[in-house]
Length: 117
Image 1 (tube, rainbow, N blue to C red):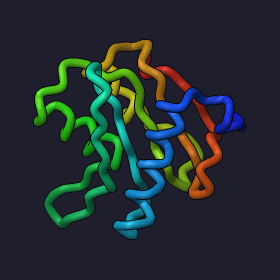
Image 2: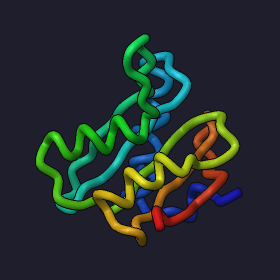
Image 3: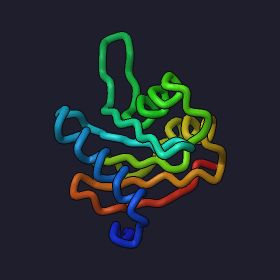
Image 4: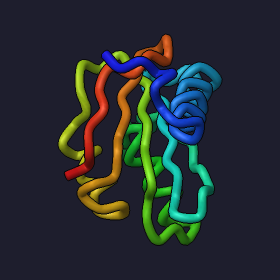
């Protein structure tokens, strides 16, 4: 477990945004990413009969669709035990292997901090 207060202010912000998306939309996961200009993209998980996307992959897709060229950081709020390989791959595709990814529980306490690589 990582003390969320140990994160810098911008990383705490994306954890808070991810938590808010999860709660506001009543979805299993919320995510937020920050691009190279400091803009943030927030999403929840998508579960339709023909389309299933994790919150993080949805947030990455939103960043790409909005013209982001890179990512500085990503955060997911979920009850999941760990970050999925598919989520890390999506972050790595846009942000590179060294992009930090934070996994927090519904209480916003960061349980895992990894890089996309």
